[in-house]
Image (cartoon, rainbow, N blue to C red):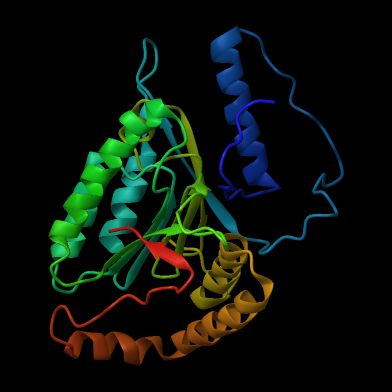
Length: 291
C-alpha cells in the first residue's frame, strides 16, 4: 500500500495576464535548453482563468525572481537570494516565514544580524520540526537545527519565535510544512518554489513571485498592507489549525488586530521611544513552539 506520510501544508499562487505569459516564456526557454525543441506559444482570445477559483487580488504588478545555476553558456542568476536579503534588511517591524527548510547560511546570517539589532524586527518562522525521510533527517534536519540554534543565541532582545503546526488530537508536530512564504511588515509578500536552503539560493532552478506597488511591496491596487496580511494570514490559519470554531474567533481577532494598522504612524513613533528588547511576539495557542 506504500508509505503513509504525515499531513502536508503548502501554499500556491495562481496568476493570469502578462505575468503568466512571462512565466510561460521561462518554461519554454528551459524546455528548449534541455531538449533542443521549441514549444509553440499558445494563442487565445479569452481569459483561461478557472471560474471555480476566486482571486484574492487583481490588477496588480508582479515581479519574478529566479535562481538559476551557472553552467557553460549561461551566467546564472541569484535574484531570489538578493530578494531574501533585501526584504530581511528592509523589514522594520516583523518578518514572517513559512518554509520547508530553514538552513541557508547566507539567509541565516541576515536574520542573525537583524536579531542582534536593538531596533530590529520581530521574526516568526513556521517550519517542519522533523522530516519524513531518513536522508533529509540526516542532512537538512541537522542544518536546520544548527541554524535555529544560531538564531536563538542571537535573540538577546527576545524577538524570535519558531513554531511548527499541530493537528488537533496530536501532541507532536507531525504536519509537514512545504510552503515557501515570506511576509515582511505586512507589506512585502513573496511566494514561490525557493526553500531557505543553500541549494535554492544558487544551485537549484527556482522561481518566486513578488507582488509590487510603487517601491517594493504588496499593497494591492490602493489596498492597505493590513488587508493583504488578513487575506494571506486568514487562509494560513484556517488551513494550519483545521478547527472551524476556534479558528473563527481567532481569525476575527487577527482581523481586528490588523485594523489597528490604521494607527501605523503612531505605532512607529511609539516603538522608537521604547528601550531595546521590550517588544515580544505573541504565542498562538495551537502552534507548538520549537525550543
